[in-house]
Image (cartoon, rainbow, N blue to C red; front, side, top):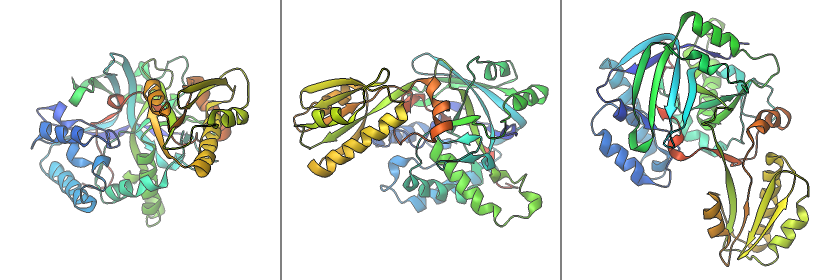
Length: 399
């Protein structure tokens, strides 16, 4: 089954690619100053910043008015001839992260008929974490009337030998520039013809297998899927295979790439009663060799080795914290960083749980057997490591 294939990719003809390329809309949601600085940098220049709605502005700015501006910018950019088409190609990407590590990927189009975020799905493309339905409407609304799409979607493949993506290097150079606001550097080259065909074949999905697992952008892919399900109801059979909105532009990355890192997302319950928490939590956690958690209550800590796979462990921790909150009150929070979680969970009126890091070898077997992890089970890298909007693709038959 062919799931990931070459696309007609639109790249901009602009003088300043740094101003064109902007970080994903779901980053820095609590830091509006980041987005104000991005707006200052871009000014009146063409930019993907004008083609998306940062989640930092949801509930702050008029979403309907912002969406109309997005549609107008798309139309304006097309009418002004800003884009050139890189026909039927993949783009091989080398992204130098702020840490200096280089992450390698491949941009192409993903068949939405091969993706389903629901638990129990048997599609070749699976969600890795629970999809939060409340996050979909804003994204669906933007995509529903859009003529273009831009990917911040990153999808994993399981290639322990690291043989597939690096084989795409060496094509015609397409872009090479510094990313805005400390995002590092990116370069891309074209993969077409026989080289693209070999990659397409190497990425085919055997029936019933999990070939692709969502890394970042699951809610954007889910929004694209929801829009496609609505569109295809009114299409004749002859258009179902080729209609542009059936596909979504994405970047695939090998989960075993050394630049891919997973970070835990810890749990903290603020303004609650810490007395007795460690004892109750310890009584409910199993013991075994392997994954360990650290329980926090006031100034006390206890580490427990549970031996549980991360998905089951996160579900159990969320359950016991939910039970504690119902009995003793409290405000839940999700915290990145061990020291930050210790500082909050160690307050006199707080409790917390430090969770372990996801092991890369665990992810594909886990989602194959159990489905998606609970929400916020892990984070992939840091905020500035996320994908930047850059490449575009038409999602309507004619622009």
